Amino acid sequence: MTGQFTSAERFHITLTGKGAHAARPHEGIDVIVIGSHIISALYALPERSGPLALGITRLSAGNSWNVLPQTAEIEGIVKGQSAQLTEQITALISGIAAGFGAASEIHWQPTETSTA
Image (cartoon, rainbow, N blue to C red):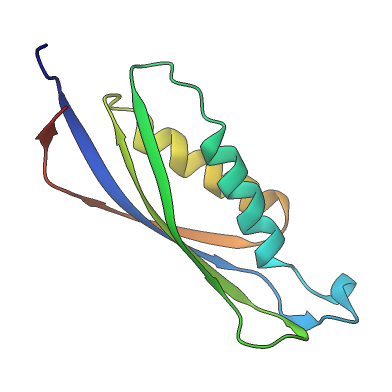
């Protein structure tokens, strides 16, 4: 079986919402809920342009049991063959965050190219 070259991109997402006391969640913008929606949407991406491998490897938010955190971070890797994949994922993340009233920053870092 002949392998195909695939590209892999590491991503780091920072979500910024509005912290609030857990007893008053309506006063905040909950980055944990937003991050959950983003992760679900990423795992639901269809394989339209060839094989897609996606892994979320880190989700970090807050340091208290009774406060909604202002920021959250999500990291992972995407392996695929579509030149438009990075742009599609960036638009998806930005759209979800904006829909909830939060800001998002996405940083991409290419990793080594390998054969599959």
